Length: 550
Image 1 (cartoon, rainbow, N blue to C red):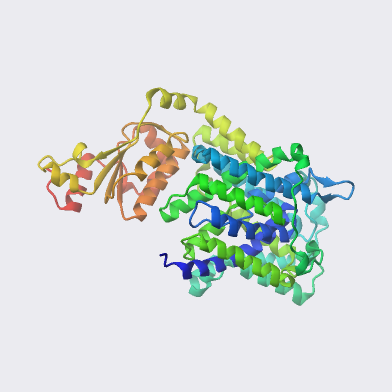
Image 2 (cartoon, rainbow, N blue to C red; image 1 turned 60 degrees about the vertical axis):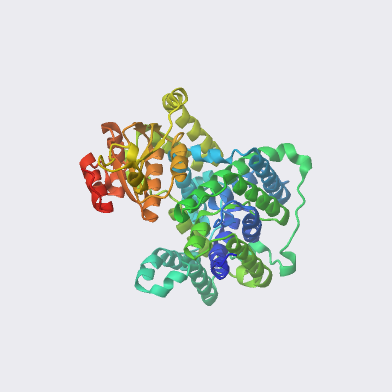
């Protein structure tokens, strides 16, 4: 019987409070409306929690998914009214859920692990740029542009036509969001209060007290009463030929977005999610979102990380998060209507900045050429064209540039190895095998090229080994390493350390050493733990386990 019920419930409620402004904002980005953002979060939280494959994952609208559905909305307009075709939008979301369920049954979701890190980084930075650019108008108190191209075309005109009143809300909200982390360091109890909630309250209060004439969420809700908030949308399957391509693209992004969030959760908790089950859960959540008029969903990194930090350990936290938002929507809709869109724009500005990949940006000048080219291509295509096209181009380019490594894996059939201490060169000469076998020391020896197409096998190899206190990563058989290989190896080592395991990395060739040095790997793991001599490692074993290895 699980004993984390109280912590799961408290975490779910807290994450819902964080999710409320984000759900409203992502609903705004999607062009389906703020209420649709909340319904998406409700469907993701409850249905995703019930059927998903990540114990601590929390689903709902995300910046990438909201941005993508917005691009589709520009293609589906009702006649000359210039209003979005909601039936088309929710039919696409519903169909994307069906596609996800079908993909989960094929058991191919695990191939997400083969995505090069440079593609992921370019994608995330591109999404960050899109989120920031699409909120400029709302920040200035103006109506949102239809697409990124319009943002650039009308930028100077919009600056001249800005509503100064909106800045009375947007700037203080933005200041709170950026200064909150410093305040948390000085005042302990503030760590339990989410900064988006504080910004939301502050921005709404300023607008109310000053009586500002600026756009509000209520304007988008059309004054809907609580009884009118719920609508059932029956998918229009007669237009399947129109909807299937957008639905496939939406499903593809859902897999990428969700499973990357799950990998973040795995690194934090030491657990392993089920990719196929998570894909099924997202399929069911998107089916539900399409039926009730919610924004398309995915496992959300920000909410998942918050859930872990607040003590959530089971899907109950996600379900409580969805139920809390449902209660807010049905009982407190009048409060939501009073929120200025400029306040949500400030929150999303911060989301856009935070979603950038700050792991790659500090070392961008030192990236291997292939990784740098892929990163730039994906970043610019994401911003200027299409998210899924960007990922597809990036993956294809990375595969073409890595054909030699892929061929070498196929031909040579490299297998990563786990070697016991007694079978290694670090084995004490005067110690019998029985005593030696009991020492909690293992050697992980990767073989061949360590790049995006081979690193997952190394992670799987390590995840199956017995308990140990000392891990020696022997890179003697590694022929090359790329960005994906470096970061995955780094994550493996950091994860081991969190479990109290001491790690040494040894025998890197000069070429591998140069890449590891340039990408900050040695600094991250500590120079004392890197490329130590045979004598240094054996001396450590002697001291750690109080044995004679001479």
